[in-house]
Image 1 (spheres, rainbow, N blue to C red):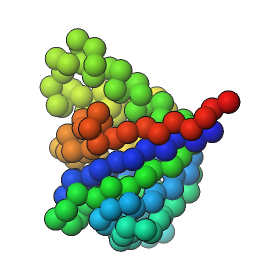
Image 2 (image 1 turned 135 degrees about the horizontal axis):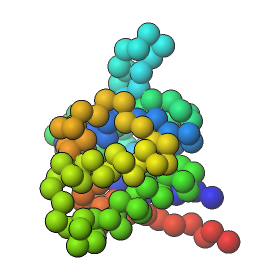
Image 3 (image 1 turned 180 degrees about the vertical axis):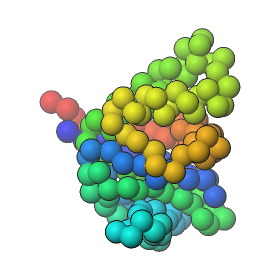
Image 4 (image 1 turned 45 degrees about the horizontal axis):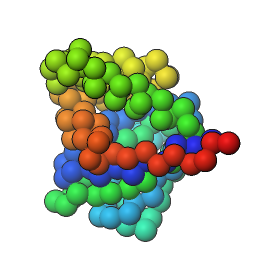
Length: 153
């Protein structure tokens, strides 16, 4: 079973470098993103991926995405269905009265805690970066981040 997400990421927004115990595949529909990674020496790497191109992050490989262009970029993220669960849990939280009253910082903390429960660890996520990722990527879930659910029978 797989989870397929369509995501629009605004200029200069990023998903911080993170790891998880499953592979993920990215296919860029519009624009360009840079897939971030860490090489064997610990240096940050950037791989530009344009519309019609794809990238793969193996299980437990550090990776992230940044839109370093001046235009929004749209891509598909395809992963094990386990990737969908933390997003669903986060969306459920922010729709509750408690979640709606949370500050951006509290939402960022909740996001990190929920993801950690699914063995997703952010590696370059000082509070400000997570807030930026939250504000520019996850918070816009209803408008920009749509789950396409394949038949699970």
